[in-house]
Length: 285
Image 1: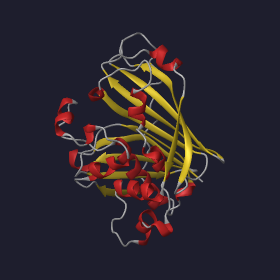
Image 2: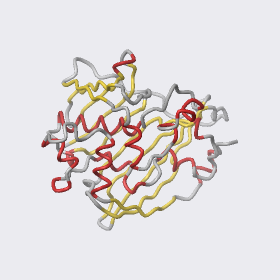
Image 3: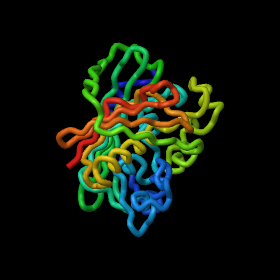
Image 4: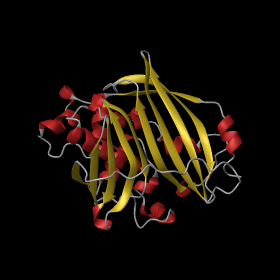
């Protein structure tokens, strides 16, 4: 069986040394659309090294290592075709603000393997710490088409209720035609996001945007719109990837403010508001 749940869950954690610089942070910010317009003081916080603020979602690419999707496929017990793999969801918990440069240790392990019948869903947890202690924890959920059906635990299926009432804010963010090509320079070189032939083999009309790029675009919109640009106010951020985004499309981001949290939905405007992110929550101070 290409997915051996017992073997994957029993595999020893993998420890990797990672490091990053302000240049890596700036490149990530540009990859999620920061710097538009280039001279806006609010955008210069993300692009100018002398006043650099680190958007917490940078943690998902810090160290320019393989993204969670790719790391999960290298775990013992997982032997699947990358063309059958999609990022299903992502959660991030911040223990301290992400520094603009640093060296740390990332420890990753598979914490769950669920049998959805027509697919397997893996959860890869990564804990990152530096010399001063824990920095962040992220969970990447990976959907592997055609690898379910072995009679395993289906895992949780309930989805959070949709936000009620009118949103507090609605913003739109244009995704550039070359956004995926720029974003992939932060470390996610999956050909699904650049190679038309590979995208076709995976069942798409053309290369799609990285889910984690949409994840970053959305967090930036929340921070800039409802948190006064306060990147260090974010405590956690989670989402389910409900659909794809094609470079060149427009994202419509709806936000509902709550007590210490913001609920968010994201849709692709040009495809009849096709859902992109749901079950999305930003917890903050």
